[in-house]
Amino acid sequence: MKKTIGMTLAAFAVAAMATTAQAADEVTLQLKWVAQAQFAGYFVAKDKGFYEEADLDVEIKPGGPDIAPEQVIAGGGADVIVDWMGGALAAREKGVGLVNIAQPFKKAGMQLVCPKDGPVQSTDDFPGHTLGVWFFGNEYPFYAWMNKLGISTEGGDDGVTVLKQSFDVQPLIQKQADCISVMTYNEYWQLIDAGYQEDDLIVFNYTEMGADLLEDGLYALEEDLEDPEFVDKMVRFVSASMKGWKYAIENPEEAAEIVMENGGQDENHQKRMMGEVAKLIGEPDAKLIEAAYERTAKALLDQGIIENEPEGAWTTVVTDKVSVE
Image (cartoon, rainbow, N blue to C red; front, side):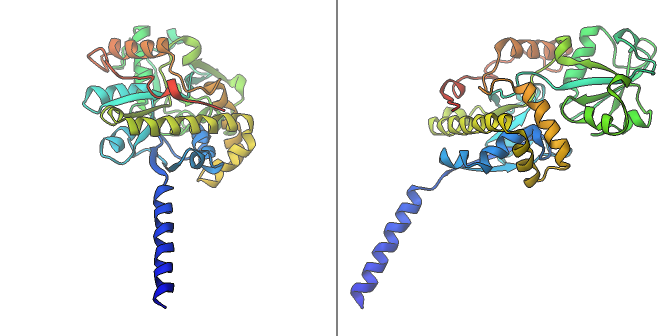
């Protein structure tokens, strides 16, 4: 009897040691917005087992209108966040040591749209009218663009009145604004679904105008990146994530279904969104284009959103080692 108990305890100990040795590294990812195809690559990477293959246990936390990724990571609630460069650089200047470790989105999806039968036909018509934009860090590209155009955002006949836009298209439908902000992959299609035709809209696309700032990058804390083990974990995380993005781009319908299983709304909308997001990612290599970073930083400096030239705000220590199969 004693021999049997001894063998059982020994077997249990071996099993426990094996379990400990195989424990995956935990990573918490905080998204910038709610679950939707904008983040399909991460959901796909988790669903298809790419994170598990990289020895990672990844928790994906959805965002929302009351969730600021910069605050979440600063408070220890995430290891890595999805954020726009404008918000990240502004937070960095305030003391949150955010560093861009990867840049999945190469192009910006932000646009301003106006009804073709409305008072705004070109940028020359902006003064004296109301333009809508989201806040919580989403307003930085808009203000930088207005500054580039030399248009005041203080209202009056010579400037524009800025409407703090809700996260939908109602301000245009209800005529609260002459033009509103939309993303190529989201709110633009909400307008189409609401009855607008593409020919009914005048579109000012930030990327086409050369006024785009970097969107949807991956950011970690500077202090964490001093730890080689953390860097190794991020290399595996970014590699698996980009593998997820590659799969999502090649299999958009399946990717949309995976997003739906993780809280996405309206499958047709998610499929359409996936197609538009793929255009912004291009080749899924996660590498930051330095010229795009410099353009973003300069726009923020010119507008006074940040006062000092950023230093150490991005690194290739992760992407230099990233492998996308």
